[in-house]
Length: 66
Image (cartoon, rainbow, N blue to C red; front, side, top):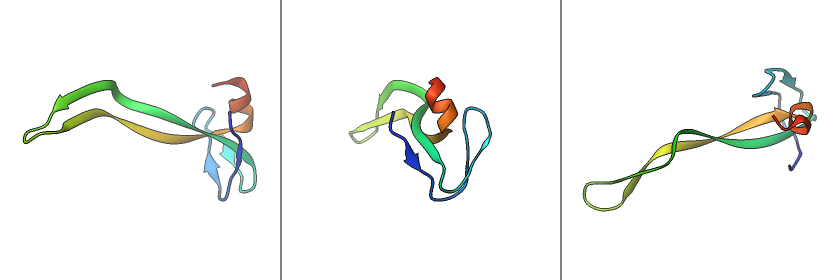
């Protein structure tokens, strides 16, 4: 997993602890909703019913694999 340096203060998504500016963290993507749910849109095209969010995990949680 790629570890990056925080440019500002964040909160860890897994343990809810603080990630200080300059500390190491791992960005991860989570999917809310149904992953592969697609629906035909009126007038052509498709609509997805899932949304991806990038959350931050502190170095300790990233090492554990949470």
